[in-house]
Image (cartoon, rainbow, N blue to C red; front, side, top):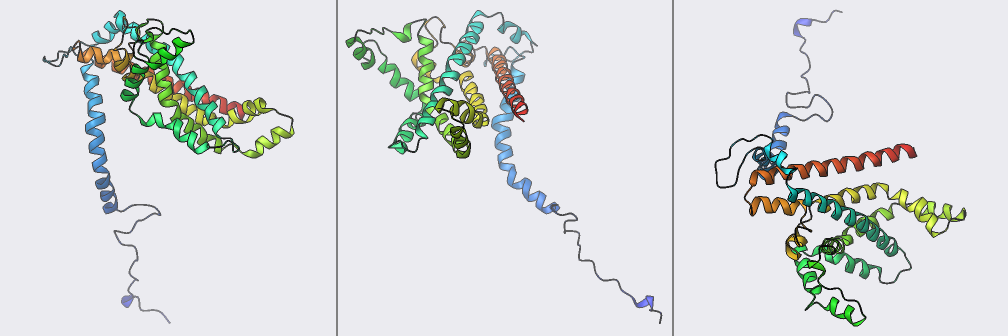
Length: 316
């Protein structure tokens, strides 16, 4: 029997124009709503991040002062930076600050984290909270407190040290000790945060590795260098990059405690940017110096990531 094709009607397709053709695909209306939800964040980031960054980049090629009509000067601002002795001094001070800040910060935060990770240590929670507390404070507030503590006439630290025969003098007015002093204030302020990061990383190091090392006769130092440090490699990479960024951005304690003195000996790159832009009104030069600092920070982060990836490939 032959079916009459003239009366045959195909079954209605279950796939409509609004139904995704592929698994995981979004409809046009879903994409529209997604962009609508992202619009607020995109507008805010564009207005307060990307537009100022692009505006500063343009300004760095002009002679803007904040009070004139900017004129295009090309690379003149960048060329003048490397012939300005104050900028070179600030670059050197930033390098010295970084060399002091980063190793001490990592060593102190890691050592305290290992100590507070011991299960037999009493009052671990109290010590963790007390050490983390300075990080919550504003750097300006902490700097004001330390400026009072170190004052040669009113500070209690010079007073009590003088009782045991140690005369500090005016460390913030010393061309030798001012920069290390403000650097150590930065370490005191921030090492509690990095201690918490190291504590989180220590939770990911397997106890089985410690047990295996102990069975092989490894002592505490051997276990630390062969088990703890390799297990914290990713955590350490993050902390190195973040501490480098903090060192390159040092400003608050310098502004409060020394104002860049004595004789520009504590003037860092960010403080120099502030001086050029808001004291000398060389906005174009300040913008150029900002982008130089950005490139230095970016390059330092890339080098650290490259070294970390290189070590990971060697261990594979």
